Length: 142
Image (cartoon, rainbow, N blue to C red):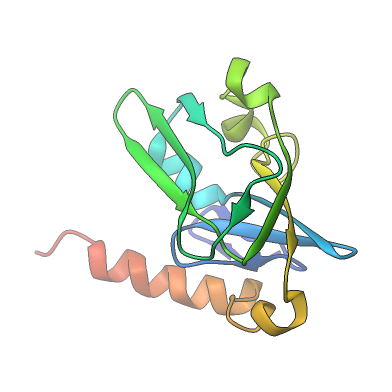
């Protein structure tokens, strides 16, 4: 599992530049927030989820969330249809912090072109290199 300064980026998942992870499950993908983003956010206290059955367009809002010090959004990683959302997060948003790659998932999507769009996402090795660059770019100067 690639680690970047204590942040996990499991192999076998795909990643986006807005800190979402994507896990292929047959012809569907499960989506959540990566370890770096959930640690940076602190304890998540509120999550807004999309409606199941809704068409999802890549780059549009998938979910918004808040912690005591942060408010952020994740974008839809692949075009398709929202099949299911993790309603437990509405009552226990901290599951994102406790298990961001497991019980803290956000949505299950049935992509309209899974094979075609996966190539636009980063694998774990690419995501680790990208995250190192991002961290260096945002590091305090001095």
